[in-house]
Image (cartoon, rainbow, N blue to C red; front, side, top):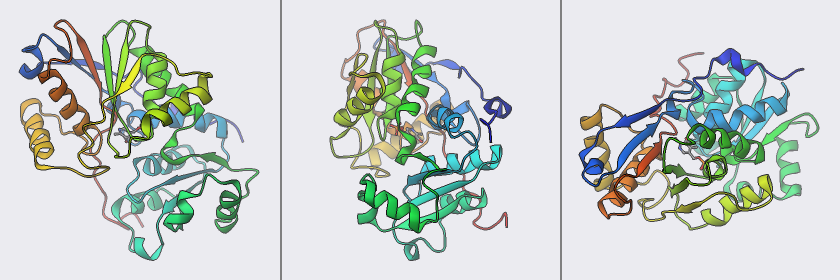
Length: 309
Ligand SMILES: *Cc1c(COP(=O)(O)O)cnc(C)c1O
């Protein structure tokens, strides 16, 4: 076994940075830039590439086991990486198996890519961080704990955070403020650490709960030994929680597509741009600010379940 050759997948790195003319920003003297991480790779887009790549190098061809919900972008990216690079993958999915059969399109895609799915009930899933619970889950999944490479839910560990520092480094000198939508906070943790000292980062949580400041800081302490970089969260734009939406957000996303011809990934990217449009309207950024929005992913088109079998 050896480290997979990720360059074979020809990632588009550094990802492009485009200027977008939008009167809602220019009116306030703010220059909006889109950091198109969604174009890095068709099957491992955005921060999923940046977080997985260092983990796959560390796994060095061993099986990779990771965790996610029934619509997890991270599970799909991991499964696709396994297919493309030829290592085996196991996905531990939150929720009882019966509730997930037949598989939804996202899980069906994972299975079609060769990921072995193992379902655990929600209360066990919540406790997967406890060593005894994890051991039991691995045993039940038939996985050898000594040969498997474990990647946490959402892919956020220290390797992933380090991978995301590259995102910050690519933006040095090119923006004053960089904004990103957050799930686990891993991308923000790395991004903020990779920026230059005169740049700052804004995270927009898409989940409800107010845990993300502590969690992002924990990831930074684990990775760098201390809270790192100039960053803060804008916690008003989760619209009720993950995958929740409201009419204003839906209208915003549709209008954005009409204006700019860009279809926004609904769970993260739409909320990010909605947040930035609101913040600019509120006069948050002084005229002359170069504001970069990280486009962390693109809408996912499901394949028909079982069509590939
Ligand atoms: C996974 C994901 C995120 C969240 O990244 P975290 O590092 O978990 O905060 C943001 N945007 C998109 C499109 C994603 O798929």
